[in-house]
Amino acid sequence: MITINSPESGFSGEVAGVQFSRGEATLDPGAGGATAALAYFHRRGYRITDSGTVREDPAEPDPHADDAFDPAAHTVAEVIAYLNDADDDERARVLAAEEAGEARATILKKGAAS
Image (cartoon, rainbow, N blue to C red; front, side, top):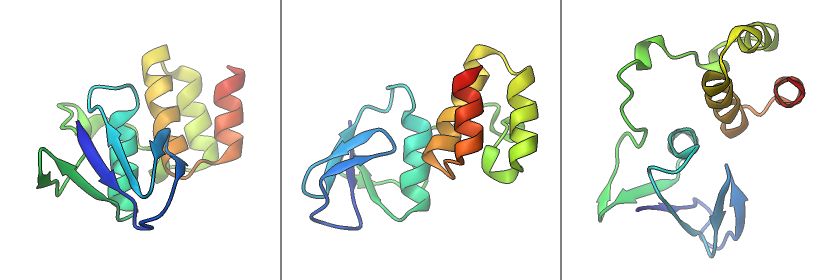
């Protein structure tokens, strides 16, 4: 399990699909969407610890990371075009990354409609 501490120590609520209580949450690294959530927390300055060790780069290594489509690096039109041609698994991965990152409504709405 991975422990995530919010920059706001008293925060209770949900962020990137992870439930926080008094500024702390735990995340199973094998759970669906965990990689995108960890990347989001890392970008936003959350403290991430795994077995007592602070993780410098919390995203799980992906052997195809160089080839992975990052929706944050593309326009809305480019992301929608990519989603139109993506298989179900890739569509889910890109939408999770979009939701955890920029969360642009047009992309999320289009993804839900497809």
